[in-house]
Amino acid sequence: MNLLVTGGAGFIGSHFVLRHIAQRPDDTVVVLDKLTYAADKEFLDPVNERIRFYKGDIIDVQVVSEIIRRYDIDAIVNFAAETHVDRSIADPIPFLHTNILGMQSLIEVCKLFPKTLLLHISTDEVYGDLEDGERARKPDDPLTPSSPYAASKAAGDLLLLAAVRTYGIRARITRCTNNYGPHQASEKFIPTVIRNALAGKPVPIYATGKNKRDWLFVYDHCDAIEFLLTRDDIDGRVFHVSADAERENMDVAKTLLRLLGKPETLLQSVPDRPGHDWRYALDSSELRGLGWKPAVTFEEGLKKTVDWYVERAGR
Image (cartoon, rainbow, N blue to C red):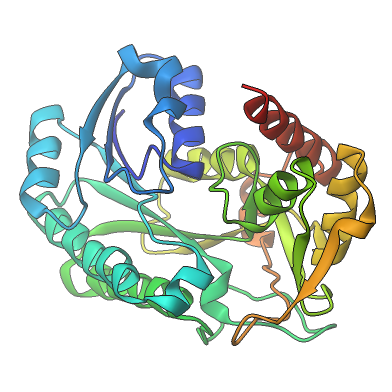
């Protein structure tokens, strides 16, 4: 299989590239990444000689088309995205550029190369939040995004599903819960807690810290994508990827402080984020019914994450 991995130097994308090459060493893997603040080409150093790397933007139809033509690409795995909610609230424009216009550009490419599969990585945030006790979202539930980030991802999903119906392109969508693990951008919740705690600085917690997230270790997410990438007869469908590891933000922060040997007095409440979603949860029973299930417990994943950041801080 010849793959084009967009956003392959970012958090989840880099893990996918590393794991794919380890599992399928004979495949051709091409990485296209804009190398924004959230990416780091060094993540790919272990496989530098095994990949072809291009610095570029998915919005450039000519560049993406040339890669597909040159390497006879069978599938595009699209991780390229602007993802941080707070940044989207401050400045939505980059999110519209990558998450909406970028998606339309990939659709245009797939119209030119109808045999190429597009597997697009989306998010649980397209559904908006849930109340306590409300059932987990299913793939056919309405999309009610709360932030510019979530709205841009929802728009991209809808554009892609419309293109499947209108143009007959080959595409699949995964929507995942909150990922965590090594390589994650420092502004995200878990890296922020670790970074501040290591420096002995206050750890900011929005409001009461009671907001809930379902945490998915990045290795499990990548394995789910790999699983769906090679399945037959699932084009045009949306699949949920979740680990059923729902935790309150405050509990996650306290667990991290305990792993780091730092006092809970570092925790500091800050004003809540505008439009802050209360809770996310996805029903992944359809994917599990096909044979995938998470392999890393929350406790194991958090320990792996802490160890990576501690080692990096000590360099």
